[in-house]
Image 1 (cartoon, rainbow, N blue to C red):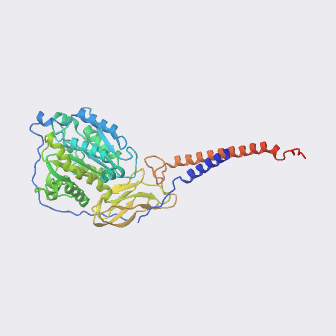
Image 2 (image 1 turned 90 degrees about the vertical axis):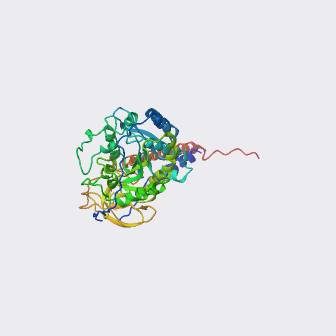
Image 3 (image 1 turned 90 degrees about the horizontal axis):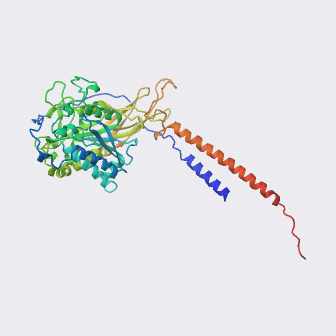
Length: 487
């Protein structure tokens, strides 16, 4: 029995050793070029009120206070701990934590999946986003593994929800924060950089900027009130004229905005905005806005969503507003998975993932792959052919052409080191060590191998020693004395 047990343990060890991850091959196929397809449209006239003349107690009744919202976020984290985590990205001027809910089947873990963020209550007097985003979080928690769309989002994305970016403004019942600064004018602007030093920004703005640098967001949206439209970049123009001023990814942004508008109860039926979408510079030019900064500095495709004609509707209307926006929010997040091009970038000499960049010929913008897994997620409008280019310093770029239909395209690249063999410097990743294609550090993997070998050697030694002892005990009995026989 003891020998059988030892043999069984040896078999288990050998199977565990054989199941260690192995390197996999990737595919790919080389020079980026630029080009912007400008488009002119008519102008819409609309003026949003900078501040609500008066926010009465009757209007506030039914909305969560900042304390109640914080309790709700923490309670959500406890109730839905299997698919969420709660964390703070900083504090407001008056010290209120900026709480975020992350929803995923592996919350808090790095994965080769796209990440999306929703931000509510950017303006203190536009509180609908606070309430709607909490409804979204609860719906996803309650319907995970029950509803296909909820399951797709939880299992294939990392969704981050910041219900309020401006808790102080909400408490003061005004547009700006505690310093009376409009947070959606406080980001560094591409056309008029007054002051690009992050230390001179409001603490809420700094928190968002640092958040974008820490997380690898693919797309995002901020929720506002005062109109009913999906707004996309650019938010302003170089000469400050009110005209259509599209960004390099104008087609992709119009597609994303249309996904939201057409999934909405009545946004796409707007008589003011064709199709329920609009270019920011054409409709309501602003400078220092959050969505342009996201796109330029984070490679994050952000929309500004106006989800209520009234900035501060009665609380009795909140449930209806949630229902009207529910499918729009879900479909917008799911569009990251259902369309676009996704993949990973590897080094040919080592097989390790590398944080290269991805460009599309004819679109003058690039996105970066993550440092951990070398994964990228590129939003593109479906129904077209694209030439996709992967590149990184020290490697030869590679390109290939794809036809993007209604479904997403998965495309991996293997980049060959350029120059002489051995001249390429090792690429650092987030774990600051060599990583295999699954993201597991090689140092840890090698430690496991040595541990397996050590245990295997120890068990073999015990097995041999055990056999010798058994043999020595059996030796005197190999030739037993003859028994007397009665005749």
